[in-house]
Every structure is written in structure tokens, then in C-alpha cells.
Image 1 (spheres, rainbow over the protein chains, first blue to last red):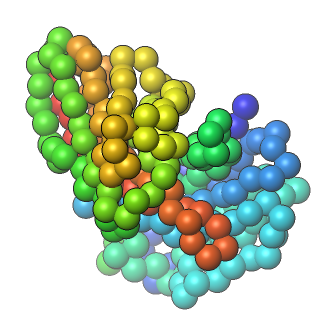
Image 2 (image 1 turned 30 degrees about the vertical axis):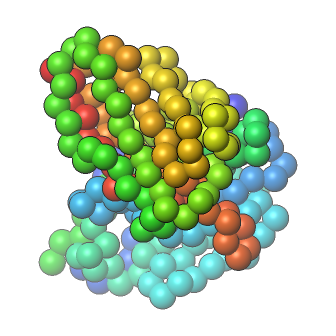
Length: 117
Length: 114
């Protein structure tokens, strides 16, 4: 069975602080993909990153960075120098293949990030 | 936005009535999905489609049916709406890109069953 756990329900930080959002996953698949999505107050889901199970290199994109550690089944997301615009719900997701070649995303329950002035 | 439009964006309906939500895409993608989002559950897959008239169930398919008679439209029907189906519904498409595929989501439909 696949499972994604985001233990942090809500995090509040002051602007310019660094913040890390945790994601722990479970899967029996040897090949899998992990994702992060952002859901701002407007409600849409914005794709942030995809990482496959063979690539444990950390990735940095501007103020965002991701730490993938297969040994601990974690795919954590760090925002450096947070800004008010980062306030959103962040979802971690795990993808598996489905019958017919499609994919299914198993989502965590999300972490609400509030960045205050 | 990957060319996905969901309609309606908001709907209030009464228990026991049928409801159909529409997902329309403009880019001819093969795979389409319906998810529902509920507090404490994240998003969960209801049904998906891997081509015209090819659909299958996801993890929370009870009480829902889907149809895909043409590539661009994927319809989700609640045959007899119940209060437990009050949720935000997202349609998604699978987009093939450089380095792999991603799921892109529509804007969501907020459905309230009273």
C-alpha cells in the first residue's frame, strides 16, 4: 500500500525565516515519483517539483529546495527567507502506475504554512 | 493552466438529486482524472480515464460514475448526491514533458450537498 504522511498540520513563521515542510512516504514500488504541490488561498493546485526514485540529488530552485533521502523515505521541502506570498497549503504526493498506463497520485494531508509580517 | 476548464465552479444541490461536473481540456491529452479534496484527507482519486470510453475506478469511486465520449471532455456524475459528497472536486490531466510527466489540475469545483 502507498502512503504519504505530512505530520505538520500547520506551521506559522515570521517573514524571512527559513521553514522546512516534512514528507515521509511508504511504497513497495522500486520505481516511483514524488511531487510537491502548492495550493494558495485561491484554491488552485500548482505543481512545484517532481523527483524520481533513482535521483537522490537535492534540488534548488530559487528560495525553494528539496531534500530527498531514500534511506529514511523522506522528501522534505525547505523555503528559505519565507515571504507572505508563500502562505499556502503544501501537498506532498507519491505516484504509481495504473491499469491502462495512467498514474495515480497519493497525497498527504497537506501542511498549512502561514507566513506573517 | 494546461488548458483545463472545470464547470461549474460552484454548485449547491439537494440530497438525492443527480449532479454532473464537467472537465474540459483543449490540448488532446490522453489521461484525465477526477479527485476530491477533503480536510484531513488531502486529495483522493475517484475515477480516471486513459482514453475515449476507457475509464476505471480510483480509491473512492462509490456513488460516482464517469463518462468520456470524446477526448476533450471527462464528466463526473453523482447519481444521487449525498451530504458526504460535499467536497471540492479537481480534474487533472497528465502532461508529457521533458524529463517525465506531471499532473496539472483544473481550478476545482466546490460542491455543497444540502
